[in-house]
Amino acid sequence: MEAKDETRYIQRILDGETELYAVLLDRYNRPIYSLIVQMISCPEDAEELVQDTFLKAYRNLGSYKGESRFSTWLYRIAYNITISFTRKKRQEFLYIEDSTINNVPDEKAEEILCPTDDEERITALIQAIELLNAEEKAIITLFYYEQKSVEEVGEVLNLTTSNVKVKLHRTRKKIYLLMSKKDNTSLWKGE
Image (cartoon, rainbow, N blue to C red; front, side):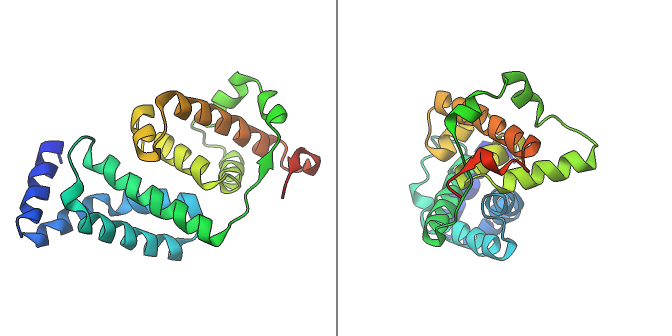
């Protein structure tokens, strides 16, 4: 669906054709669920947060100004709801010293998320991503899984483009460390 079609649907919904909201639900339910479940790793909570996202989006549909893509606006709502949820739950995340992250060679960090058929590596990657905090999971999900541009990721997370690039780079390094040194517990702080 083109952005102009979405804008027409939104206007028609605002004009009283509320049943058309189902079209937007069908289109974005899976990607929004994917983002949320990656951030919190609990399918049951993710389903509830997806419902909260679409309910909040529906209630605030009149405030959508079309300054960004509708999907970006919706992802931002989902991200904010999920971050609020993780704060309430006070989930603990792994912390790695900055000096340790900075010592990872750039080329190692770049290749860690390259496509592979190696099931052991895929499993290690999934386990490493599980240890990231919610914002890091969101960045990885939006950029790699949802194939959003750095600019769109910045819009969703309310970050500058350069900040997204830095966080994406550091998160790749963190994943590399988690995958290659998962048994080295002296590496981790603050668990």
